[in-house]
Image (cartoon, rainbow, N blue to C red; front, top):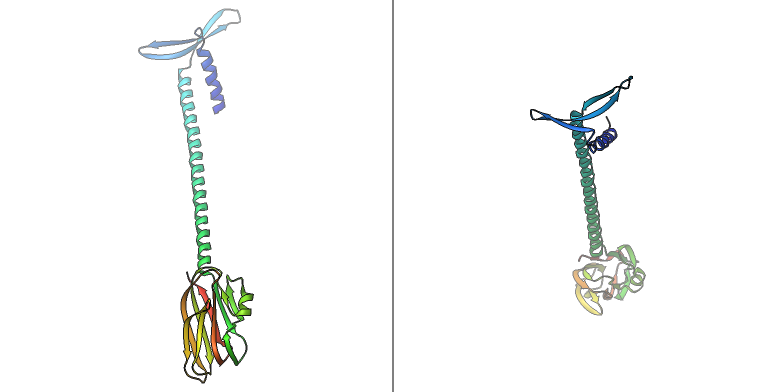
Length: 235
C-alpha cells in the first residue's frame, strides 16, 4: 500500500472518528478495540448491522505513517548535512586558492626580478660607465631600453639586491667601481696587466628610482662573455 493511499485512509478514519454514532470503543478484560457500526439492508429491506474491527488497521496505519515521517526527516536531514558540508568544502577551497594566489603573487614580487647582460664588442678602450647592453635575459624589468642606452640600472621595486660585475682588462692599476646614485659603493682594483680579471659581488638595498651602474678608469678590456653584469632581487 502506498503512502498516498494510507494517507487517504487516515483522513477517512479521522473523519469517521468525529461521528460518535458510527465509531464505538469496546473494552473487555482490559482489552479495548475500535469498531465501526455499519448499517446494512437485506434484499427484503430488513435492517441489519455489521461491526467492523479497525483497531489492527489503525495500529498498522500509525506505524506506517511514523515510519514514513522518520524516513522523510532522515532524507531531509541528510540533504541538509550534505548541503552544509558542500558549502564548507567550497568555502575552504576558495580560501585556500586565494591564499595560494596571494603567496605566489608575493613570491613573484619579491624574487622574480633579475637581469644578466654582456658588454658588446671585442677588445676596446673604455673610460666611464660600462654599457652592458647585450641583455641575455631579464625578468620583471620594464625599462630595459633606458638601461641599454645609459648603462644605468634603475630600480623599479624596493628591496635587497645581489649585484655582480666582472671584467677582463690589460691596463694595470685600474679600478672597477660600482656606483649608486653617484656614490661609489664598491672598489675593485686590477693590479696587474696581461688580461687580468676584476670581479665585484655585493648585496645592496635599493629604493624605487635608485640608479646603479658600473664604471672603470681608462682601460683596455674585452667585451662579450669577458664582461658580465647581473642583478637579482632577493628580498
